[in-house]
Length: 408
Image (cartoon, rainbow, N blue to C red; front, side):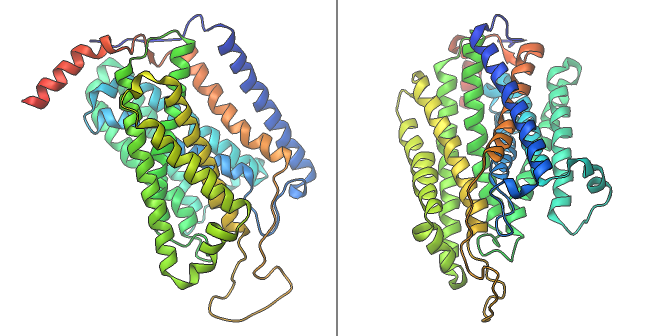
């Protein structure tokens, strides 16, 4: 069956209210940026020890999720799972919106956004941050080209090639994001090549969770039928991705426990870190991993939309907890300046840093989510990236052909 993409019509009060809410939240975030620019970062919870605060938690989550959100399109174009082909345009748009929302927060949180052009024209190519600028801009370029080949009929035969390059580039992007922390050898919390594959694994889980939420909400707002079989396939993918993320988190901590120099940090995160320990066990592992896994293993999961949506929400909350533990917990742990030597000073040697996020930081972080939501909703409303039908009957001929092909 041929799938036709249509803009959302007659979306009703709920859609418009959410759109207005996102717009208001974005304005509040921009106001918070102005407040922090005027008064300085003294009005935030950041310090000389914790220089990346709560906005970075939101920003990195959005950037990592952007890579994973493209996975649905990659499943169709790269891995031949053509049952996901109707969802590929939405996957591409969502990936770009998440990346733009995350980069907006990142740029505004670092301060002096007016000097961005100086950063772009005076690059330090020894820095992983300079490399990431190319990875981010390249990702947008590849996804735009990918969308063009999907939406322009004359270019359809280039879609597999464009999808392949977009897939490779998103792997590189997430590797670069994980390597930002992996290259920080001075921090005992980071300094591990495992962070790159760990970020790739968790990006799949975060991105798919966001995609499931957007798909269910869009179908509900536009009164588009959504089949149980398609929801079940997405739920099974989510289970695999959660398990992959859990596996790499386990390997990361077991590797750290093997090296004596990381024992203090592991004791801090796993046992004695206060809020960071609580967020790791309760937020990241239990609510963000174990509970969604158990919920999604129901044999009739395709018909349980509320359960699928709740699981995706828990994965996202667990992801934010994981980013908080990784980014802020890693900085709060007392820095060892000269490992293996005994030195002392009066400047917080080995002292756990205090961090309490302020209201402007919350508003800036949430504005990235709002910007992403605005872009996706307007794209669905004005241009249309969602098929008219996604019910089981629409997929029936396709599934029969796929089964025949598999049997052959």
